[in-house]
Length: 163
Image 1 (cartoon, rainbow, N blue to C red):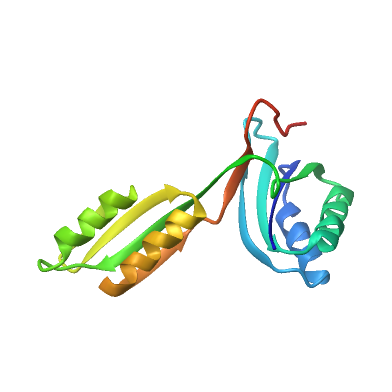
Image 2: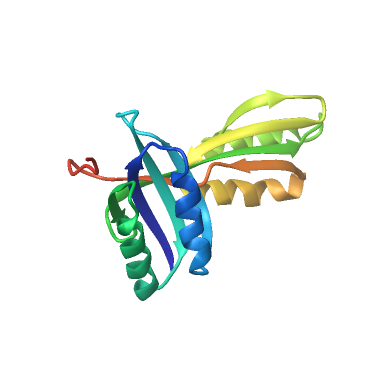
């Protein structure tokens, strides 16, 4: 089962390497990883997506909590959370299909961010399901390139993950 883990750490050199190393040593794969500063520039938030059962998740959470730079760890998998992914997708487009692709983008909630004589680049920030749906709809037009940020997530409501 896909697990979404939010980790607050001290914003220091080597933290990413130690987290990735912990996953690697235990044979766990990271499906998606997003990291950035929080409202406090001395703290980073990692959003990690991994495929793990409940027992593996428990071990991952314990190991992350043991790390010296870790401030807090929370599984968001079964929590009400806002989950987003950014997708940039470059699609083959010419005069014969450009309008159809632009209509498709608008219907999906995507924005056209670049136009060339042979391609359109679309941007969608939405749920992973909607970004994947747009990707699938673009396949028949010819996808030239895709960039995805990976999942970012934040627990809903007034509860916050902080120091």
